[in-house]
Length: 310
Image (tube, rainbow, N blue to C red):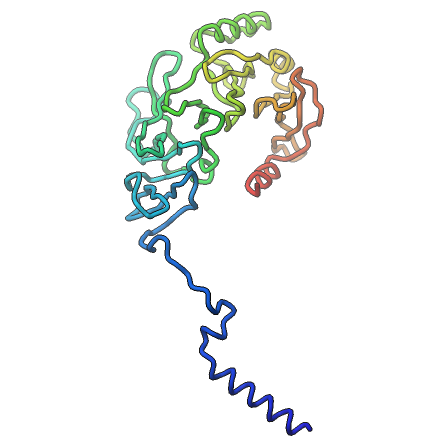
């Protein structure tokens, strides 16, 4: 019996060895079709019907048939959403914040692309009327920091500035600034001047609104938080949040509001000093009156890890 068993086993092994590898494979009968020829040096996933691809050190975009829609002329190419994408080119410019006569450096200058192939350089105008490109230092540029800059809710937020789909900066209108000035005066914000600037506290536009901060002229001083729609109109100022933290000394806990309210709650951060002297940002939830619904207790690193896993 044992001899017969080994004889049958040997026959099976011989027959298996004689079967072609393709037929013996678990993928037998299934063939792959190359949709786009592998001719690129790098490629990102498709988003909005287009994919960023690299050729010769430059990035452009192709459609799902492999046709070039946006030429290879960018040093950074982000994902498309709602027909728009953030891209960047390394250009040699002088840092406008460094003052007159500053030496030109390599900067990553940002552009807003449309899926039609058009592009617009992102620029903003400061309170004094000077026009600057939106840029990051090329030496410190990290693509991962900008991959999340997606067109959402009618706008894209890049480095604290808010832009429409046409690449035009959305700024608080005159009525909004007048109302904010009245609030600041009521709170005795003695730092407020005609040169006061504003910046978005959120990397996203939510339901057509953005959380903003009217900045102080004094480095480190808290600003005035407000919510703006995409017409530049004031939706609401958060005087209670700012008043709690303004003009009460350097030791007052500063609230950093991150996102416009969803269901009446704000995601907000507050600095926390550790015993070793280091400072980390803790996050929790505020109601729109500035009361903590969930006390800050989530470290920044944990929020970053969670966001990257979504």
